[in-house]
Amino acid sequence: MSDTTTPAPAAAGAPDPTPTVQGIGFAELAERFGTPLYVYDGDVIARQYRGLREALHPAVEMYYSLKANPNISVCALLHSLGASAEVSSLTELVTAQRAGVPAERTMFLGPGKSRTEITACLKDQVTLICESFGELALIDEIAAGLGRTADVALRVNPSFAVKGSGLTMGGKPRQFGIDEQALLDAPDLAGRHPHVRLSGFQTYMGTRILSAAVVEENTSRILDLAERLADRLGVPLDVVDVGGGLGVAYFPGESDLDPVEVAELVNPHFERFVARHPGTRLVMELGRYLVGHSGTYAARVRYVKESMGERFAVADGGTNHHMAAVGIGSFVKRNFPMRLLNRAAAGEAVPWNVTGPLCTPNDTLGKAVALPEDLAPGDIVGVERSGAYGPTASPVYFLSHGYPAEVLVHGGRAHLVRSRDDAESLLGSQILHDVTAPDPAPAA
Image 1 (cartoon, rainbow, N blue to C red):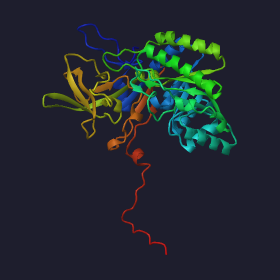
Image 2 (cartoon, rainbow, N blue to C red; image 1 turned 135 degrees about the horizontal axis):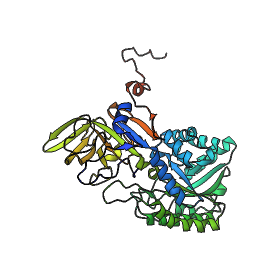
Image 3 (cartoon, one colour; image 1 turned 90 degrees about the vertical axis):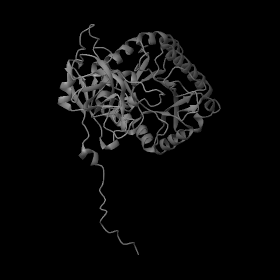
């Protein structure tokens, strides 16, 4: 199996083979589960995890960031491989728990934690990553009320920034973390919060990083920052979280990270740190890197048409399920890898605009995508490398289409891991107010 569900290119002059997932054809999956449909290849998830785990320094714990794909079966698969869990909402916390991840291997981060979320973490003894002084005071207050001491690591917004990420998360004014200088100016921070035990630091510099050298620089500077802050604040280094942000190559000109190259660069920094701090837990967060390659979004073509000289394939799913495909944040739309899924692609490939069912011109999964000239209603088009930030990062309720079905192929068998929304499930939480009933008389 290659990086995605895409088979190796056919020999020159031969038609492309029909794509499969662990030997199962997409036409069979579409017949069984319907479309639109997300398909996750468990073998690819395992390959991504093991490839980095085997190369990375053994002291480094790999945490799966559920925000990338919070499906409970995906989380359970990664935990079975050895991953811990990083969560950012109460539902993600419950998901990790039900997937079998123990509290001591779970961390909760995010800049806007609620009182309910903090309370749940303290009751279950889940490590909190604190992102502001106000949050630290609230944690101290809640811990006092519970008669407990909260185990807290501080998220640091460093004064430095490292170029080379698709989205920079630190080194600038941000809602994330506490500014490095603010921490340096608060040497008595631990003493001001008697019901909090500060246990370390976390820093996350950016995401979608495709340069091993950038990962190395981030890692080196974060480890140095943690040591300096621990010395200044008198905080024990029980845990240092170096973030992650390892990316996936989606577009022409991009290349995937080589896990061996990454490990060869970062392992010496970890080795020296472990020699100085043998009892410190080292953490790396990974979301997109672990699951991005594994997913294919499959949508069935309903209509084909031509408009002002351009071909359009209108499918049963669109950016309501795959908002990442619209290219938000890019000056020029770039397509995710796309291909025909239900049959071998023979004949000439021509440009097609692949769109969804939404009433907006932004509902374009792919622009000028090279697909067969004879593309027709009933064909299935796949958006590849779609295992991360798919439906949960999309406006799935726009026009009340709801969530698509999700399928995990594991051990050579296809398993439904999320049911498709229908009208009853979508309306189940709504309450019909009888607008014809008279208003009650006002109280005397």
